[in-house]
Amino acid sequence: MESKQAVEQDKTDKSSNAYRNYVLFILTLVYAFNFIDRQIIGILSPFIKADLGLDDAQLGWLKGLYFALLYTVLGIPIAWLADRYSRVNIVVISLTLWSGFTALSGLATNFTQLALARVGVGIGEAGGSPPSHSIISDLFPKEKRAGALAVYSLGIPFGIMLAFFASAYFLKGGSTDWRMAMLAVGLPGIALAIILKLTVKEPVRSGNMQSEAAKTKSWNSIKTLLSIKSWWGMCFAISFGSFGNYAISTWMIDFYVRAHVGLDVTSLLITIGIINGTAYAGGVWLGGVLVDKLGRKNRGAYGFVPGIALLIGAPAYFISLQVESLNMSIGLLAILLMTSGFYLGPSFALAQTLAPVKVRAMSTALFFFVLNIIALGGGPTFVGLLSQGLTAEHGEVEALRLSLSWLAVPYALSILAFFWTAKQIPADWDAAESRNA
Image (cartoon, rainbow, N blue to C red):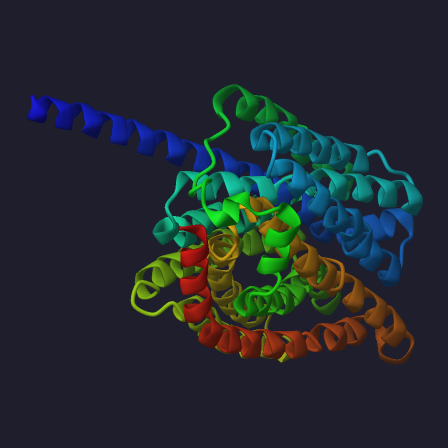
């Protein structure tokens, strides 16, 4: 009898594992579409600039603050809903919205229309990550969250890779038809939203819902969350690092096109796409695996591992801007992409693990609020405005090179923040376990 029960339990466990891995796969694919639609404007930037007659400052607003403002602000009320209502439905609606507005971007004929479409993409994407993080945290135990959220974070490099490939396809042969690329990457997201709705069920919320943390009013839980030192430390660490990454992802194609006249843009896009799908994705995966393993003995690994990785990648990036060889520059950029991927899984896992059980989605939303105001809103906009201001004196190529070089400062701040946070994590982790027990 016992052996039969054991067999049945084993079948149930395998079925459960297969389903949660399927959900993780689907949510990762949704996140990839998030970054396809977010990244596409940075890739197509030189052609949009030429077609609509835009300057670097206008491009900076489009790539940064116009997208990030409502994306950041709306994340908080959406997370409030996600902590109370169906997270799956929220992600489905959000995916439909941002995909639709991406497609509409391809119909824009001037700066204002494109700006409004970008605001719409931001509104949709606000409902993507906080509910998804919460769903994943309910499906995977805390000891495996860094790995699971690292897999989810693979949506970033794979999404960026697919955006580069789609752009290369529609721009092959010297074409400058950026509009078809916008339509082509936007419409499939609506089909994915239907698949998500039909195949994924709302999971039971994990954690002891009878604990004091679960019974506490939401506002008190949020105050507890915001009092955690390592939550803030990790939040600023990833924000400063992402300030650089978002700026690079939206401006490096412009830089290469300007600095290397006559280059094959299609080949460049494919090469950068492959690097994102290999080096960057490898860094995201490896960061999660290392921290899951090392973090069992030393919780500080959640901060030390990303900090050490960036200490290698940031100097490589700075040198990449100074070398004359395009291939060498891309190779050095690949080092940054790989090492900067290390912080995604650990950072997002810590945001979930430290949070009171009642406000997990809110923890991610507040995390993204700080992250995106600083990084997504600031990075691309900063480089665009600075480049525009330096162009008269230095010319377009050197102005953009100098602007991108200033990103060494936020990378240095990120490294320092990761190392400081590593020292705070063990005590905060223990306190979170006691609070949510």
